[in-house]
Length: 261
Ligand code: RET
Image 1 (cartoon, helix red, strand yellow):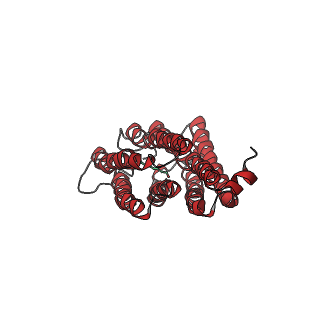
Image 2 (tube, helix red, strand yellow):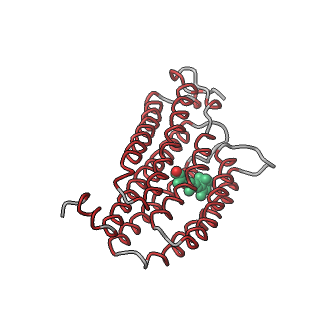
Image 3 (cartoon, protein in one colour):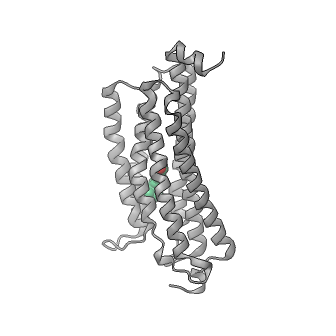
């Protein structure tokens, strides 16, 4: 495996090193911000903010593991050992964080309990299926001789179902929200589509050859890391701002202390 093409160049090593470092810093400080800012929304929206902080906190742990793992697998660029790099950290991270991201999205809308659980009962299992089916493809596991691209295709089925539920079903419940909230939620959905779409595209870019390919390795780490920062940190911060707008709409007291005019 450790042929010349298995070696990352100096620039490639630094790029992945820096992107994982950026991911770690973003996750850590978004978590702190959200946990500290928890009380700057009405109590009924605190759960959404806390779940957002939990997502980035779980990711902080996994980025720490990935960063450490990367430094061991590609130590000093002279002793590269691509096989020692474990893509499983990302998939365990997603398995925990993707369902929670869906929970925070539904929680901030403060829908009626029945509507909430009906949407989550469909989204959470689909999210788990999407991640579990994608893993053998990304890790290039040989299970029953099924090719990585086929795992990718199978994983796309629940992915499309999630998008359908989010756009069609959640769209229906939007009409009950105020103008300002509707605008933010639409922005949130756009952010979700744009960032979640990066994952399958990255998967395809990194697929190609069997064995290790430095360019594909770099594309995968950069693609997944940027998508993660947007899908977890930026998404969590937009959730926080929706929670604050809704808090101000629902309590004059809150609006007076938190917003000047
Ligand atoms: C895989 C495999 C190829 C097909 C598809 C995939 C989708 C992955 C997605 C991941 C989202 C992760 C998020 C993490 C943030 O915490 C598994 C790459 C469709 C959509 C949002």
